[in-house]
Length: 294
Image (tube, rainbow, N blue to C red; front, side):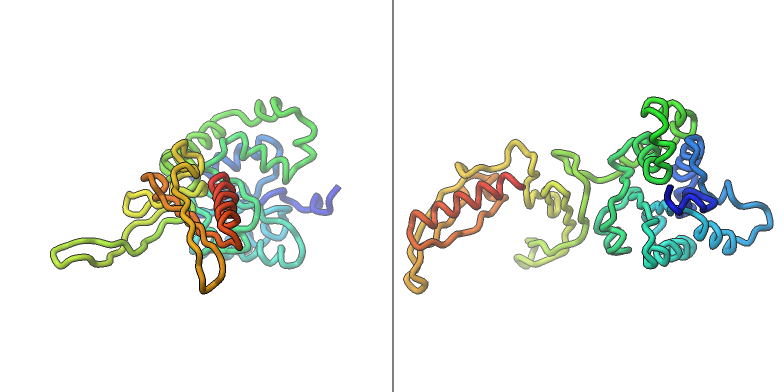
């Protein structure tokens, strides 16, 4: 058995109060039904308790800390206090933090904590209630997880709390921005320069830019790069390969010039070669690899 078993609590839930009603409470109840000893303020605090003292004790006597990272969580005083308490334990060599990304993008998590962004996380926008609850159980109480078949764990965890949690996850999925082609998660949403034409000619303004994990990107509603899973993704047949000799460099260059609208969205790099055929083949090899990966 791990030395962590000596602690009073299996799991401390670090969260923003705004996420309590719809997400954290049903999650905590569902985990408790499975036998997880959860430090959750509604379970652990009694009238007259010192809030800071109770939190300190909960942090110190819990095996793991489940951190519910949301827009509500980032920048709040009490959540930062709790989170720093967990970070201090990790700095001493313990692996205690289990992140849940709740309606946040990777860029938002990176801006809050680059170290936390590198941790494998549960993502509420991509999982159902049973997957999250049983996934947490598998980490914090592997003994309970191993004692019961999956179907039995699902039966134990059923009930009003799990239904409430699933409803919240479905709401998150309906609200979160995703790739219109494949549904991949949003990774960036910002403002970027875009050309505009008005009474005095062309000028540069700020426009909405969004990009997704699959490579799809839009600027002011116009496609900047297609989705990797888009059946209309261009192939080499959508380009003209043009070669020319550069005397100053004593080499050939091959350029892939778009000849269709979809090819205009994926610019392929020119490639050099000692011979015309070598330059051409390098464009073919590099472009095929690029188009497969995107």
